[in-house]
Amino acid sequence: MTSTAMETSVFWIVGTAAILGAVGVVTTRKTVYSAIFLACTMISLAVLYVVAGAPFLGVVQVVVYTGAVLMLFLFVVMLVGVDSAEIPGETIRGQRVTVMATALGFGILLIAGIGRVSVAGSGLGGRDDVSGLAVLIFTKYLWSFELTSALLITAALGAMVLAHRERFCRRKTQRELAAERFRPGGHPTPLPAPGVYARHNAVDVPARLPDGAVCELSVSRTLERRGVVLKLLVADAEEFENVCVEGRVP
Image (cartoon, rainbow, N blue to C red; front, top):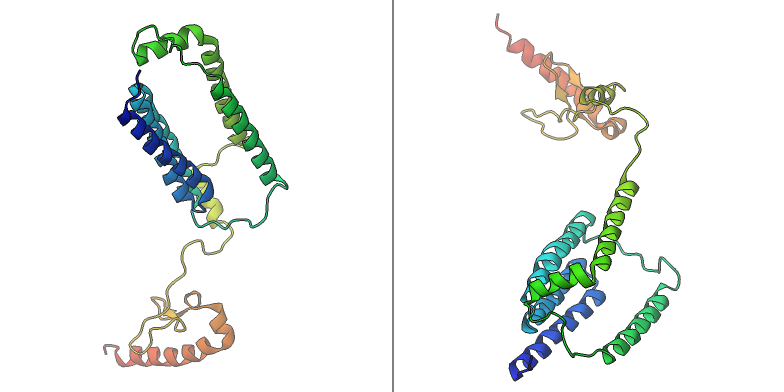
């Protein structure tokens, strides 16, 4: 494949966007911004694959990585939250130095490997990219493909085993859970609201039961300790009794 001026321009533009997106992933402090930069990098790589004559890899890059893996990252961000507090110090001592040394060593190996790569032939045998990749995967790289599949299955099973919680007793039914909730004798349901009268509508005014008695659960215990509710209780009780007596039908 001969490189034209248009392909070279697209390579430099899209490659620069991919590098800037990768730098933004590791430098920004907001998790959502990191996910956006990661999507930019993945889409840029897909464009590079298409320009290089591998549209199948470009579509797989968008569908699998941008559409599936990145969505998984976003779901994790939604579950964890974006406003979680960060620890100012290092959780593991010396991790920054170790990461920098590892990145430097990986970069040296990558540069050395790129310098020895030959572009004599692609090995596809004149086929298109889809059929050529299929032939290479299931003939020359069959064992590597199967070992990778076994490794992924083992990792999935390990995650299931680690996340599984052993149950030492039988599973309780909904009726049993409801009975345990009401058994202590407390008030699992919301407490009654404060009273609403012609002259009062505040949290320090208790509500009335159907028989005219005062509902002590409708006011705060703090107001009772201050003595504010007790004074209102006496005044409202006398007023309520007067209204009941005067409004009674003879």
